[in-house]
Image (cartoon, rainbow, N blue to C red; front, side):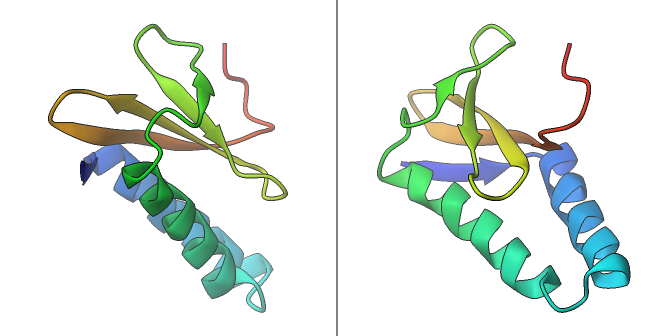
Length: 91
């Protein structure tokens, strides 16, 4: 199955990396790699995340990281929609 990153998801990952590089430089690259690898794992197990808050989405909780990957599975691909911090107001 194909994996497609939306522009908002790419921007989220870049923002996470920028923030971590300033505040926690010793874990920035490793954390971004963990996020990326977790998203890539969806290619093999696309429905492993929980049902999302928004209709038609799923959410991959990246424990122990504080991030949630919001994605959508279609017949053609897995669309990564956003990467959110677990402490964000998600309503």
